[in-house]
Each structure stands twice: as C-alpha cells, then as structure tokens.
Length: 349
Image 1 (cartoon, rainbow, N blue to C red):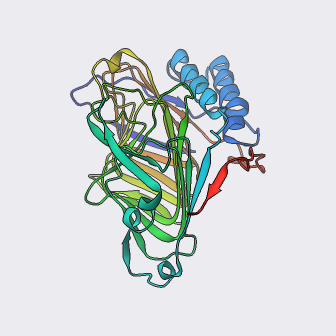
Image 2 (cartoon, rainbow, N blue to C red):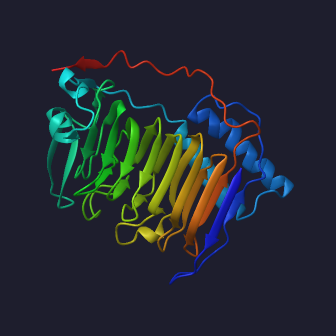
C-alpha cells in the first residue's frame, strides 16, 4: 500500500499518526463481520506483539474491538419492505436532471417535527423499523438529492447503477439513527455510475441540537462503477457510531472529511468511534483534508486501499487515527450467507 500524508499545525495540538502499514494477513474476507474478527483484530494484536504498530496500543485495540462489535451485529429485520420501481420514462433522457426525492423517494418517506430536538426529521413510511428499496437500475441521467436532513431510518437501498447521483446542491443531507431499546443500525446504500458530493454530508449525527435522544449507529455505503468525488466546500462529517463504505474505481474527496466530530455540549467527555472503509476501491483514494477529533478522545479508522493519499491531516490532542493496510494479495471476497428477510412484509403500493 502506498500511503502519503502531510501534517499542518493549526490552532490545535497535533499528535502522532497511528500507522499499521506493516500489518499483514492472508485470511480471505468472508464478510464485514469476519473481516474484523479474522483479519483486523489478529493483525492488530500481531502487529503490536512484533512492534509493527506505531501509535497507542489501547487506542488501536479499542477502535478495532468497537468496529468488530458493530460488524458482528445482525442486520435489523424490517417489519415491512416498501419497494419503488422507476417507470420507463426515467430510462430515456440521459442529459436530463431529476430531483430524486420529489420524483421517487417522497411517496415512501414521511417527515415531521422532533419537538425534543427542535428540528425536522424524516423516516421510512410507517416507522424506522421499515425498509425502502428503490429499483431504478435502468434509469439514466442525473439525480439530485438535496436537503434530506436528519433521515433517521430505517434502511434505504437505491439502485441506480446507470445514472449519476449528486448528493447535495442547494442543501446537504444527513443520515442518522435513533437510539432505543432495539439499538437499531440505519443502513443506507446508493449504487450509481458516478457519485458527487456537492454539499455537507453527515453520518450518525444527532437530530437538531442533539440535546434529546442519542443516535445509535449508521452505515452509509456509496458504490459507483466509475468514481466518487466531493467538492472543496462539501464537508463529510462522521459522528460517533458512523461507518462510511466507499466502493468505486477511484475516490477523490476535495472537501474536509471530519471523523469524530462533536455536536452537543458535553460530548467531549465520551470517546468517539468512526470508520471509513475503502477496501473496495480499485484505484486511488485521495483525502485532500482529513480531520480527526474535536476536543474529544476520538478513535478513527481507515481500512485503506492499495493507494491511499492524505493531503492535510489535522489531529486533536487526544485523538487517534488507525490505518489498516491491505492484506497480501489484496482483500478477497467469498459468497456471503446473508440472513433472509423473507419474513418481512412487502408492499409496492
């Protein structure tokens, strides 16, 4: 793996980068859960034992164990699965731009005011325990999603593999969760030809002021057959419990990527864990500006591709960044034995 980074000292203390570039494992990647339990954790432990790991042992192990715990969570089984099928008209105009929310999503997404947090939020029709699948695999053109702030679940899966997705334009988007007795994880997946991030993007933020209900965990997956990009003013923020999966031919993020960001008073008293997984990026991954921590003991991890570049890196004093290098021969997949969700109710209406 090629890893390059520069450091810029601004109005915050800078601490050492925890690099795990020498950690090697040839264990195949069977699933996201198996990846952490059979590749990442043994690699961390072995690297520490051999002196290959640079950085704090407790921070590296703490992050790895936290992510393994999250990865081993069984995906929540939805009570109902809503399905939207894009009509033939979306297949005919490759140069046309559409509003994704107004054109398709709005019929199966509800919204309302959260009085406890003094903010509006959105959820899959019927509640956060339902799922929305959007089949637009034959659609062409460009689809803009702007202003879907505080989407609190349940799961959202949008397949638009022949079209371009623009996240943000006039307003940003945020995908998050509510922490309750079920401790649900919100899973949002976008599959497109190209994905551009044009405004702010938040993952697992607290709704509004953040003074009310906590967020649980959110996994956002952006998959593009060509590339994933962000503009210089498009900031990506990962809060505690956030995971961002990137899969593409190449990734170039020009805006600031902020891992372990704070949102509410007192948050600095608790540790923060977040992850960016770029193991499925075939070419280069470029972070123009990466920030880790925000007056808090943030532990962030990047599962790197073969060529990962960091332009400017800002680390808060008590923060840690753990970078996991690819195993010898690269990451490998085997067929997954995923849990069936056939028991969920389906509804296309």
